[in-house]
Image (tube, rainbow, N blue to C red; front, side, top):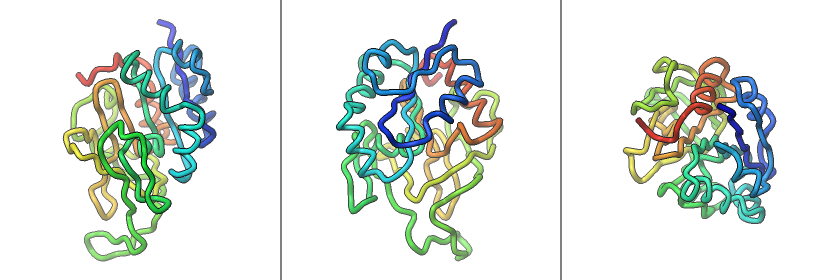
Amino acid sequence: MTQRVAVIDYGMGNLYSVASAMEHVGAAEVIVGHDHDAIRAADRVIFPGVGGIRDCMTAIRDLGCDALLDQALRVDKKPVLAICVGMQALMTRSEENGGVSCLDTIPGEVVFFGEHHRDAAGERLKVPHMGWNRVAPTAAHPLWHGIEPGARFYFVHSYHVVPHDPGLRAAHFEYGVTGCAAIARDNLFATQFHPEKSHEAGLQLLKNFLTWDGTCS
C-alpha cells in the first residue's frame, strides 16, 4: 500500500530529519509544508516542533496549521503523530513564556521542571532534560510493537505535559517526576521524546506509525 505522509511545517523544528526518518522506514512519499490540499491528500500526518511555545503557537495559528490538524484529527480521522513541542501545543495551556494558550485538543497543562529540579535523593537534575532516558509504556498500543519496555529514547525539553485525564498517558519517564512520555487517544499518538533521533527504538515507532490504522487496539 502506498503511504503518503505529511509533515506539517509551521517554521519551527528540524522537519527534514523527521521526513528522512519516515523515508528510511518505508514511506513512499513525504510532504513537508502547510499546503491544505497536499496535507488532506496524505494518508497520515506528523505534527512536530521545537522551540518556544509562544512563537510556535503564533506560527501555528497564522499559517492555519491549527485548522489543518483539526481537519486531520476530527474530520478525516487520519493517524496523527505529534512530537515534542507538537505534543505540548495540543494541551490547553503552557507555563512557558509567562503562560500561553495552546490548542486545547487534549485538556491539560504544560509545566516547568523548575529552576532547582532534583531527584528523589536530592541530587540536582539539569534542566532542560536532554539526552537518553528510559520510556515505560503504561498502556498497550500498536505503536509500541517490537519495542522493549524501558527502551531508551532521546529527549530535549524543559517543560512536560500533565493531561487532565491520566488514562490518556501511553508511557512515562522518570526525571525527578514521573513525567508523561506519550499520549494516545483515538487516531492521535503524541510523544515528548524525538523518535527521529532515537535510533532503533525510534525508527521502530515510526515504522509502526506508517502501518497504524488509527485505532488504539
